[in-house]
Length: 220
Image 1 (cartoon, rainbow, N blue to C red):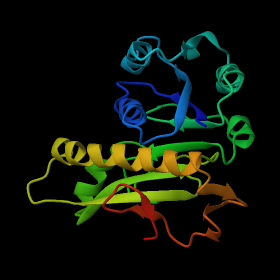
Image 2 (cartoon, rainbow, N blue to C red):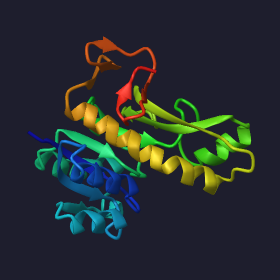
Image 3 (spheres, one colour):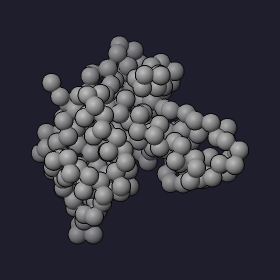
């Protein structure tokens, strides 16, 4: 039995590619019902099409408001039958009405150790702050930018001489592993959101989960 998901992406789709690879390797029990984007030329759409995954694109400029655009986009997501929406490099802030409708059924990956460094330029901010650690977080989506309860995080050391590019490049494969693990845990019913908190099996989390050596989620 596979778990139906939809993925939203605005750019190259490296996280989408990682999810597709994990499914192909038998590590992810999901069915991709839709990959959607706010950019018709997004490479993520071409990658999905190459794997026979249905795609859909809408131009925000043809709508009078963000709420109208999001309502149209998510009407297509709902029609796909997806039970989980994965924001994988989707660069638009979502309307609160949509996040309310999809509470507990939409996740986002963000390249920082939330609640640190919400928004853009997270690698730059970590370096400027002199952080010894950097990382990525997967969280359930709320109306708050990069808010919502954090499911899990992955951490890497910041090295002497790191640049934004080197830090981003070293973090990216860890992001891929983290996102796949979180989608897998939700698909298997191991992780869910309830009353604004993340539940792992039968307990509410006090802190985000971490990846174990096998790439599965475990208590931090």
